[in-house]
Image (cartoon, rainbow, N blue to C red; front, side, top):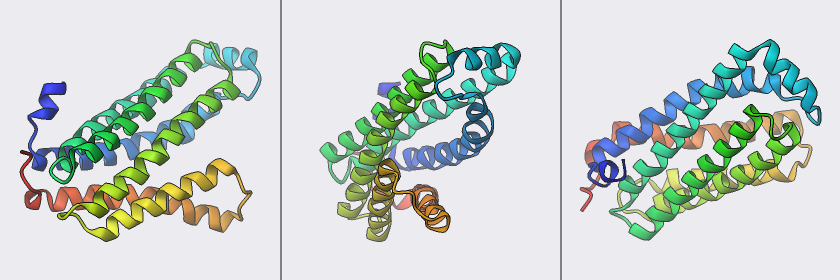
Length: 209
């Protein structure tokens, strides 16, 4: 897989990022928000085990779907390296590595939850560590886009802004519901905007040399 991505053109890598992100949004909207969350019982491992036993197929589908999202996150991270490499190889590598660390951390947490090694509190703690990696990834991604000569600076600034909205959620400031919705939209639209731009403008990207 490593050699595949190293030999991938920037045009194909851009398309890979865009399609993978849009696909992951669809899957995570179903799995993370409507299926997997229903089985997470904070501090009650026995209740979690009971729910898994009673609804094994649904929980298995939820876990498999969420793991598929994390696979797509890994694909996005590797493809972003190809897209950003022409601008700066080191920044591209850091951007990719942070996304892969995020995916790896949440994969561990998901498997630990599935096999009931941890309860929901433990899962939330692991997930928080993963989201720290993700927020750093979005910040570095935004900076990389901002410093590149071939991508809109507005997209870079939007991504950097989105990275700070993640930090605000980490601190848990008990924001008004309307403001919370605005921040969530910023978080979602920043990556979506980049993905759509990469799909539309993929032919204008410099060659990966």
